[in-house]
Image (cartoon, rainbow, N blue to C red):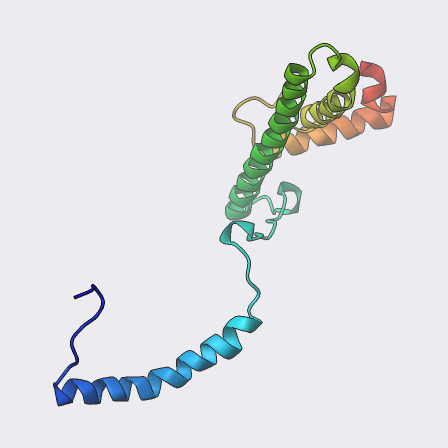
Length: 159
């Protein structure tokens, strides 16, 4: 006997219960398979988009939960930006490895993209340390804006 094949059931009570179950289940199953499922938007679970929480400047001073959410969002953003920078760096290093004799000309666009991304990452997260939080990053941004208002864009002075 093949697994999954069962001999016919001679019990009248079980046959009645199965018939009763099928009279309720068959229309529900048909409705779900022919009406509900074709009209559903299907996407993989890993493509779910979560809403952005308020940033630290939108939180009240005594709102501890808002501060916690802002710090968690800051840490997620920092992890994503660091991973993007790592991917760009890896692409440049792979280009250097594969295009060894002509790497200075072929990999130059990747190098420029990496330097621009590195500068943007450092502007946002540089000198904050390992235990940075959203408030420290916000203060860094505020001080940078004040400095640029007084002296002009910072990137012109550092090159």
